[in-house]
Length: 161
Image (cartoon, rainbow, N blue to C red):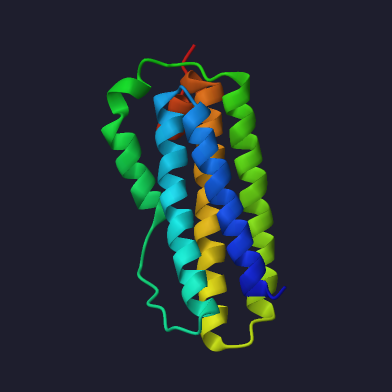
């Protein structure tokens, strides 16, 4: 298997895992997060498939962080209810973070060994997006495991005593 074939498999596995996690997650923030990241992974798969077929791809400027900001903005009211995540949901976020870390490392290596400039650019782009996914999952995990602290951390609040 070459790097593109492995990357295609990784993206398919990620899509399957995130779709399953979204189905199982009762917390509306977590569910929406998994669904949003699933769409990013589908886009990655499409780009990789085009390269695998020898087609030219257009690397559109997409920001997973901007997409997630939209998710959080649209769900602000529900987030304030402080719905506690289950341990299974939190475990799904831990697994997602590990998957993203592994993806980042794989894509870094693949970029170094890329056969064409087109592949190298794609792999570098995937590194950046997977790094953003990792940050999104880590922040969401922190939010869902300790909502009160997350709001203080996000707002850089100073607790006065």
